[in-house]
Image (cartoon, rainbow, N blue to C red; front, side, top):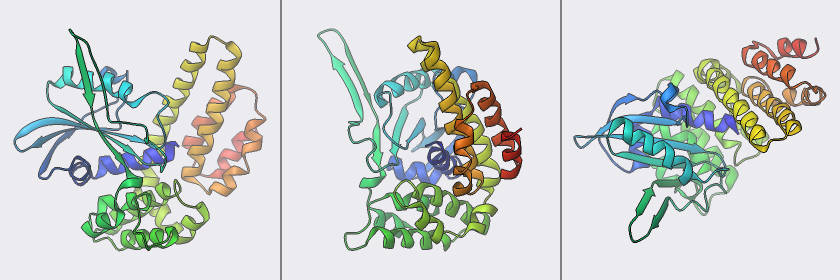
Length: 313
């Protein structure tokens, strides 16, 4: 589900003030700087959006973690390591928010972890935001452009059907009072996120293809973010295989991971229906190293025809 996470992260990086203020529930947040989560000191965990801010005169770190589905590793365990590092590194308060995109994601996340004995006490607490439980109509009424791409994943009014709600969200985004380039990016990211909850054909019917293709998000940020995230995913898959200690499992994980991420990359750049036609040919390749080379080819490909030619060489 990399394409959903990438889209949400893009919005967080492009519109930090509006989104931090809404999800944190605070006003007058001053953005000081984005923290570079790709530097080596962050290698234990790369944060989705980590920002140094000033709230009511007090400096703090706001970390927003995006999760499409349920986390394989307990969220509190992931955040314990990362928040501990942030507190040690910056010696500032750390406010952490976990944003669950999928309708069924995060239902069992209590937003804290604690233990206590006579001599020891530990507590980590963070804010859990499940979009499926957010009142979407109230968000539309704020007319905050940065929030609009998330609204299809929010709870619609009781008397509005799912399709009617999606149409309403698309219309609100297409008429947002911002310049065209920003509006195109908002519509494009809304389209990607909507597929988490709606039929892809319906989404494609409502969103004009030319808007998506003209989006700066698709032309630049998505490709670079996808390249980074897919490489991370491959590395993670290999590490998991090594931990299992089974050589065959490592090779299979590499193959499946490479195929999965090749398709993700291609679908963010080209027509998903046409990309799906290439899946059988990819699965016929038994060499994991060859598939990993094709992943890099997919990231750099300027056309689907160019990738298909490399695939069949």
